[in-house]
Image 1 (tube, rainbow, N blue to C red):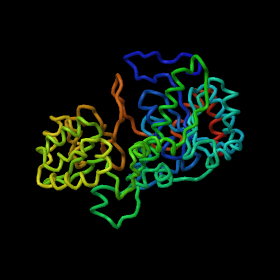
Image 2: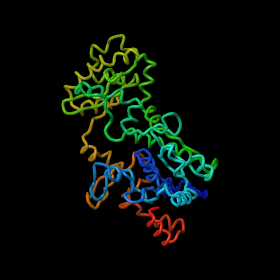
Image 3: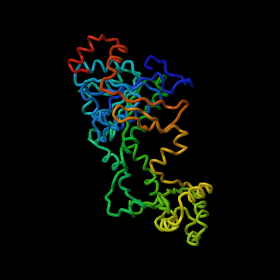
Image 4: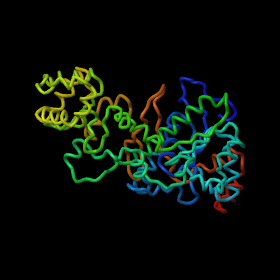
Length: 408
């Protein structure tokens, strides 16, 4: 906490117990970073605009009176405080919050920050303990820092879109233009990178004080796709028509699909053994790892012809016994019913007033204690009294006046 009493690893409490986070995030990446910290035990105060609150509450698909699916996923375990930072009184209240918080997450564009009292140099100077995490599509510095970007822009600027669709998908749908992964992949990668940067800064906060953490979602996505850059060293420049992950990828079987990714020599040897050491695999040129990578499309043609006559279970069980990285492409219902999913408590049933009981993905990680999932606030500003009156010490009359003036 800001008073220097950080949680010290009590095994009976979540890892970030006692850490206070103020989140001012309108987009997915910043909100996801806050979600990760909340599920690790931090207290996350989400700032929303007075009135209708975060625009993501109205995003599609909707859960009716409960708001959007996206908002409900991103904001579990957070509290809601409405605050208009365009008003001087709102900026004063933000300052009071930051004086007692450990972490501030913000995705306001740099050019707009000074007018809202969010200038990083000013805030880090005033609150020497504060970790200010800026989460933006292209970071807080450089010529693109103020660009408005959406999921599609970040995904393609990260390089992965250039290579999609590929493999089996391109063969099945050759007329498709470059696409993106379903949902908010690029933003979630950016949010994960932000959470990692914040946690790193938190580790040394007691010794060094606060710092400014500048996160670029594009940078994070380029790092995820760095394998494509590495392949240039093999003499291979990939494109969507020739992408092969060297060799492997998605293969169609008699009763479904599997994915194989054989990057190491021992994995290649296991794959050839699984296939019964076919004649084509004895080509002397295929003994060289780099040459195999260059001949990925040729190898994949053999793999697809071989897999089409076999069952998924045969390949998965046999391949894993030989050290081949291979797995079934499971249907959603299979994932939900999987013993692995159940053992790791990957989903938590939450009850919503209009949607009933819905299984919600808990966390993509585990630590000493399972993450306890709580619904997000039902209304914008549901916790105004808790933070402004009980925590900061303002009177109910002050809160009533700020509400009337639409400061909160």
